Amino acid sequence: MLKKYHQFPEEVGTDEAGRGCLAGPVTAAAVILPKKFKNDILNDSKQLSETKRELLRPLIELESTAYGVAHIFPKEIDEINILNASFLAMHKAIDQLSHEVKFIIVDGNRFTPYKAIPHTCIVKGDSKYMSIAAASVLAKTYRDEYMNRIHKEYPMYNWKKNKGYPTKEHRAAIKKYGVTKYHRKSFRLLPDQLTLKL
Image (cartoon, rainbow, N blue to C red; front, side):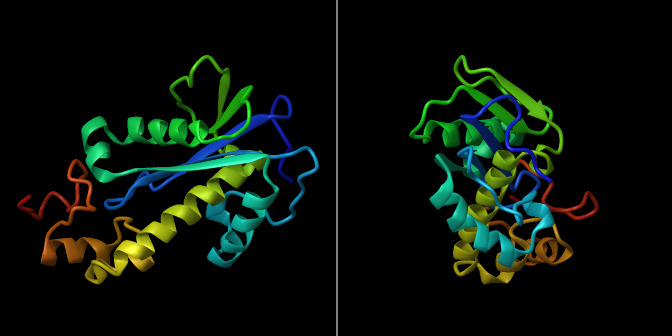
């Protein structure tokens, strides 16, 4: 059973999706949930089916005190590295909140401070606290929606299915067709034994 909050109400939970992908943005969400919020399905987005995530998204948006979602795209990921891009996405998601933030709980073990607001990092926080779980659902569904959209532009990579992750199919398509503007050029797009001209 997920806990309501770590320290006190009006804290924001934040999480990201797509850190390990070869293509597309890294996406983060930030969510503040009200005291009365309750949902028996909500969990770490990786533990939920796509159908359940899509059911939860509008509920979270409707019932949350505030939420924000932000993408950081491949060009900037390549410039500042994926870890910094993940932190930046979280910061930009928190920027969007229409509510005062008093405390931040972050999924994972690292974070760069946001303004002067205290925070704590929680390993596997998305399976422990509702606000982080809600953020993980929003980050995942918004990113998946974006990947489905760009799939139509480059269907040969099958991003609708693999969402930009390094599957065998995705890497085979990179080898055959090369890279796109949506690929992260700083990532190892193909195994060492295969060469790729960028």
